Amino acid sequence: MTVFPRVAGLIAALLFLVACGSQPISLTGRVLDQKGSAVSKAEIFTEPETDVVMTNNRGFFTLRQRLNESGETEPIAAGVYKIKVRKFGFEDAAYEVTIEGGPTKVPDITLAPRTPDINETAPDLTQEKEFEADTTSTPVIGN
Image (cartoon, rainbow, N blue to C red; front, top):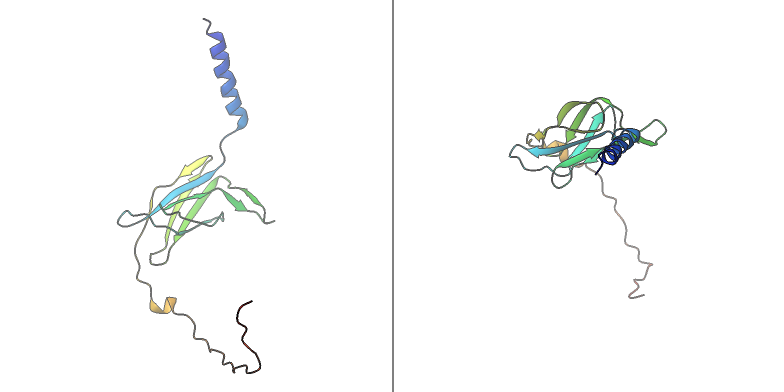
């Protein structure tokens, strides 16, 4: 039994991985409330701008791309990002992270509860239009 074929196979596998390059950059995290429960449908956005995503039912999110000036998608670049989290009924939160390359996981982001101001959610007063009954139309029953 020779060792050379095994070593050659390992070297070939390592060269293949190096040739493929590193994994694409992504930013993953989870949003929780102060009790440790997942916060679903929280809006996640960043500065500089990347995707705007929502957390899933388990509070997880992943950002993988951004829109360039032409409106085309491109991978997230390495750099410093401020993650911002917004959800009705909670205080907004922000977290700064440095992305160097490949997948990056941020620590859990905990949102503090907030009682919304009634004026914040009240709809604008609108005048309802008054319509006169149309006496010329005949209702149709069936097809």
